[in-house]
Image (cartoon, rainbow, N blue to C red):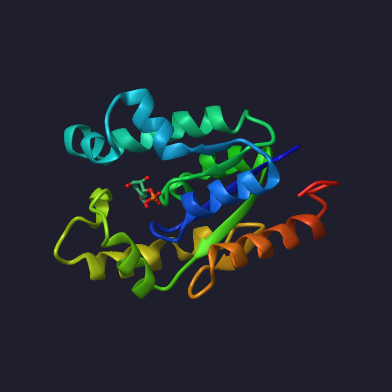
Length: 175
Ligand code: S3P
């Protein structure tokens, strides 16, 4: 079975939805950022601070190459995974891509709770979110299915994803 890959901007709920979806489907859940942190023995924030974004993107790319060889997993990616067409090609080869979206307001609210995102750790975070959303919008649209998480409960989002997966023939039998 193909992987189910969640893409989307920071704060769209990829980890939360991914974990719940995996448990609902009885599939393993893998979080790309967590794997990068584990392999490097450092948090994403520390990787950015010590080595910079370019180094992180390289580590992310190596991890995506590994994860795209998995089968049957639910994979949550980092928000910037779409910046590399090679990442997307790899993930698509063996997976169905689901994009989660949210408004800038929701994103600011959700990402403001913890300061684990080095890209948004600036006073001008509002402008940064707007700029990145504009730059990346088109890239997230390359998904097989898109679901808005604004005002929708995780259960609702998961149900919508399950309906899509079943209709598109990705799920057989259980779930
Ligand atoms: C990033 C998103 C983060 C993490 C890193 C960079 C981005 O993941 O990979 O801070 O460029 O959008 P989340 O989307 O899980 O926050």
